Length: 103
View 1 (cartoon, rainbow, N blue to C red):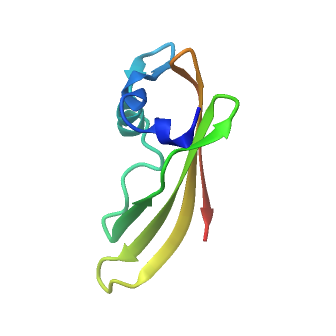
View 2: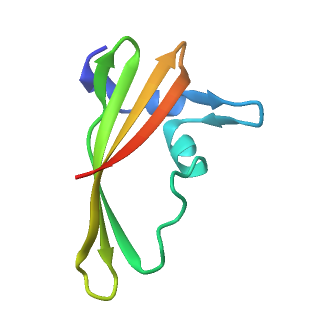
C-alpha cells in the first residue's frame, strides 16, 4: 500500500478490541488510551506530528516531535521523539506500539 493511501477514511475504519471495550478509528484509540497521562500543570506541550508511512507487512508508522516548555519561563524542559506503529490486519489494529526517546 503506498504511503499516500494512509490519509482519509482508513484512519476511521480500524478497530482496537480488548476484552473491556472496542475503540473505532485512530482518533478514538489515541484519546482513550492516553500515554503518560495529562502533562504537568507547569509545562506547555507542543506536538509536531509527522505523516503516516508504509512500514511494510501491514504496518504503518509515524514519528512526532514533542517539546515541553516550562510555563513560567518558556525555556525548554525536554524534547522527545515519539514513534507510533500500527499493525493492521483485516481492517483491525492488531498491534499498537508507542515509544518515546529523548532527542
